[in-house]
Image (cartoon, rainbow, N blue to C red; front, top):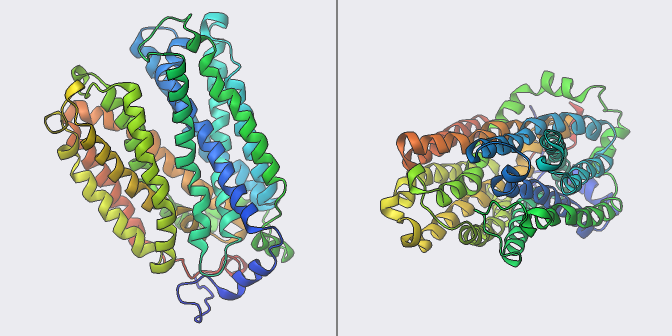
Length: 470
């Protein structure tokens, strides 16, 4: 594909088109930043509070059977959202490419917000039997639909209103929603567990935290959703999309169009995101289960609340390096920057056995806390560097009239391959071959991402509008 570039702006997006977007932008840029950031923060907060509850609360309240079976059933409902995310990308992408970014983003936020609030109101298995897990699964599926439609819309809102040459820096704002949402979700659960003196190993269903305390993070999300709606209703359509609609570039079926014309870009985008997803879910979901697991199942025996504190500290490195990544991607280009980071992720994976083996790390009370914190900090630093530019990279692969759908499908297809499978594969590898095999798995994901990056075009100078007209 050809692109239109203004040579007077080294490393910039197309000067003419981006200046048009800049001149036509009547909404204050800080409002656009807030609209893209607060939405993804809310969506990821909603997504993560479910993940936290699924480990230690939902197995007791919504599922019947022994401890292991209940946990597996709870984690299965957690995985339902990953199945829903590509579907959400298709549904919301259809309207995002036909109706507009603004209205679709409001719909995605409401879908996630209502589902999350309703989870906090659900009766338990002890109260209504099998209807409880059934309704929980349906609402979790709706959470996945909302998140599937949220990310690409927020990324487009930021990237399609960017200043010339600063698209990756502008597009990094919705990426900050992931670490911010994680900190809010886990920080609130940690605070409530402390206030209620809740022990994650407790099984007394009359414990106040299990009766009503766990519901608070879900119910309080309605406040954040209200703020998010207020901000998003005060923005306008992106100039790039508005220009495309003026030129009558709307397509009847965006999903069919993007698979017909841009199937290769969907494949590239999916595998470009693969190592990013694998790294994140190894550094959050899997490492938590590995750290707090007993030595009998190959874990380190670390305290649940103590390890959550380490994760919250480490996630700050994620947040810090997201904007750093945006600057690097604008200065050096998307591909060179991401190739270097992906190689670093592969090297990091090869060192897992030196970081995390029981012989190196210790177990239980003898656990080397500083070594664990250093491991988490390195992983989260790499996560910030690889995740930061993605909200520019994936949208840049697609034309305007199918960009919402195409970037959303690629992003969420990668979530199935890199996120939904990774914690389970990693847990099995620990049992079968030891923790070093988990690192080799991450390195393998890195190889696939590296191949995709080598095959992908450099898009930092690509016009976000003129490409749609071809």
